[in-house]
Length: 290
Length: 144
Image 1 (tube, one colour):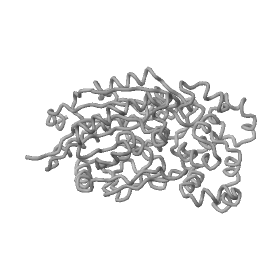
Image 2 (cartoon, chains in turn cyan, purple; image 1 turned 90 degrees about the vertical axis):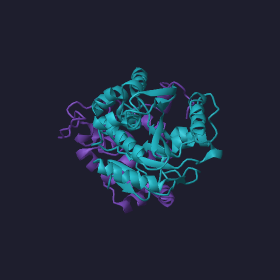
Image 3 (tube, helix red, strand yellow; image 1 turned 30 degrees about the vertical axis):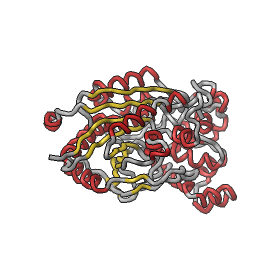
């Protein structure tokens, strides 16, 4: 019987500087090449695996939502996503196609599994989604894979725990595997590793911890899922708490994964990391029981 | 706090701004009794205090509002109904005080941009450094 499956996960930063550098042709300059070279294997992998759908787990930066109403988890069921004006004009990108049929199923399945996610029929996207998408798909290939964005609050505490995000990933996997059509899904977790963008601690980094995080997200994500926000912020700076979005991605994958790509670059204020994890399948039942 | 020495005007500001704020919140995730140095989370009473100024920053998502602010900032601030203190923070481009007041960095970047100040220039000010001093601490100085 036809069914969906998760074929792999991607990890990517989503800093706006990356998208701007790429969209203005700076990607071959010495300052940016070490980062953009890290996207080439990701572009090639996507072309080779030909997914039917990309789930992007990102956060809003006060462009899609505002604190008048700020959802803990939100997802889009829209057929198309506009480009947000973040305060300095819209990026020159075409609207991003969605996947309404799968997205509505995902919404129902997540709420059935007690993940009470906010469902959006309009979701203008900001750099949280647009930076990784710009880098996964070169200009001539925009956007050949439809995208279902999942947005996590990392701006205004209370924000969801690392464990909750990991479990959300598991719930996404169950939804995909129960989907009664052939659907190859890649899930991307986005966000910078160590960084802090406000206060006197602006510019904080921790290269050693970033390397440890990359080891653990691959081989022992449950250890990361047990960490508190306080622990994450102490080690990686206040804004590194967005690493919880990498845990959504990792939770959606098989307990063991095959890492086929890992890159790290810290040029300015954020630890930029890129990974490709291939799913090894199986073990869905034991995960359900867990 | 160390920044008071480097920011002489701090003494003239309200006491809460330089005091270490402990929000009366119990959380499994954040130990509010142990605030991280130089870190001001947008939550609780701080987030509520910063709400109006945050909302003001959000108006810069509209090109028409950006132009209106640039053309006549005083009028734009007055018509929005900001308090005198909020107007002072904006006039002084005191981004770190805005963070302490309760405005999230991503709102501040929208406002800073209207002054032609980019993210890392904003960050340098938050660190109470010049842009040149800040850039000197970075690995790749032209990754901008």
